[in-house]
Length: 300
Image (cartoon, rainbow, N blue to C red; front, top):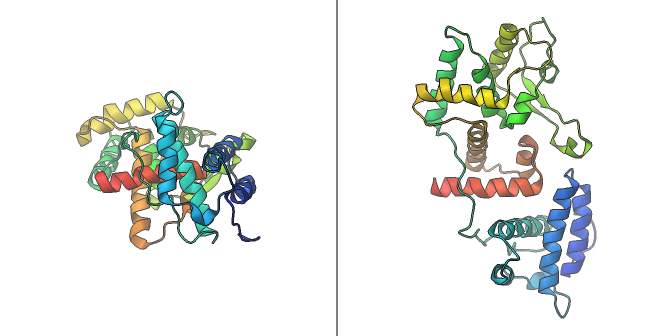
């Protein structure tokens, strides 16, 4: 980060707000990040300005304990969000060279964490894809589950993003052959434009998209089916073949994220920006996702 060395917490908060303004995130995300950090600064500086190098993990824990003891003020989810905001703030200060040690890093999330997300093991992923191929080659040539499953496993896109895809998002034209290698995820609303991204898809997924277009004679939208109906097909046609109780878009997205995160850990290439872009997340959204992924790897 270019600029002067920051010594006081108030100066760091002011610079952090400028940093957030430069980030491609929504106004609500900016307000949430800045608001949580300002609450921390206000609580920590009742009598005099606080130096950054005097902020320790214990002082942050004391702040969270104080909030937790206030009845009716902070729900467990709000406290968790405030900790996430502080982790992002101090990580920014650490990576910017403003502080030598990140005091928020050792602080674990409390027992009020959300339940672990549902996801598929690597073996179950193989079985799900195999079952989807069987259904696609069956009597009714039902390709939609296979197409959606492969797309989400490759990219981690959300259900709504998958269902909004058009031929143009793959660089395909109606009635023409194409073998897409990329999929573009686009948003119409200006405040969500930071979620726009282009993601690589595997040859297997590209082939499934091509066969899907030919099978259904797509002219604009790729999947002419509601999310509810498509997940119904997941659970009526795919899940019984695999022997699992249910299958949802959310499970597929978390599976993709877990596989990506585990591979990045093993390769030593964890980069927040990469995951924020790929999964269409704000820094806060990615911090919350990463916290759950870490718990899955530790507890799952």
